[in-house]
Image (cartoon, rainbow, N blue to C red; front, side):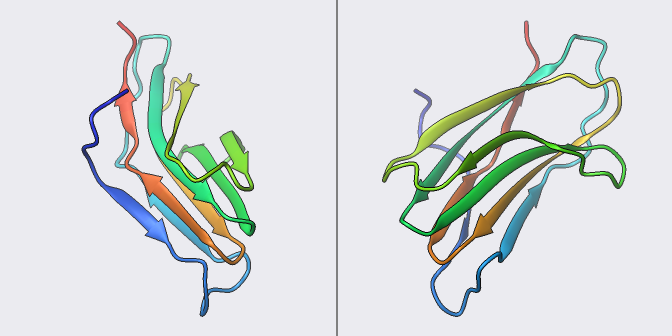
Amino acid sequence: MLAATGYYAYIEASLPRRANDTARLISPLIPANSRPGMCISFWYHMYGPYIDTLNVYTKVGSSLGSAIWKKTGDQGNQWRYGQVFVRTVLNFQVSVVAVSVTRKVCLIQPVLRTPL
């Protein structure tokens, strides 16, 4: 487990929120790398009967593309660790997108690591 440091973003899903309200975190541009890829790791908290989805994308230019990681629904009242390996030869951004139904979703700042 990592120490509890860093920042988080929070989307409140109770009123006046409406179904499908969306929060996005977008990283700075990450330069292409000659290594085989990098690991993106983060913590998330998705609790309640009306949680919708949390998606992670690699954004190249203006194209969001398909989600490279996704969770849907209540994941329990605890922080959970997520990670995904990214392989791309192009400069990219990481986009974390939370979709609310009527409760809350929290996002933690992603940590990028290149494999040794």
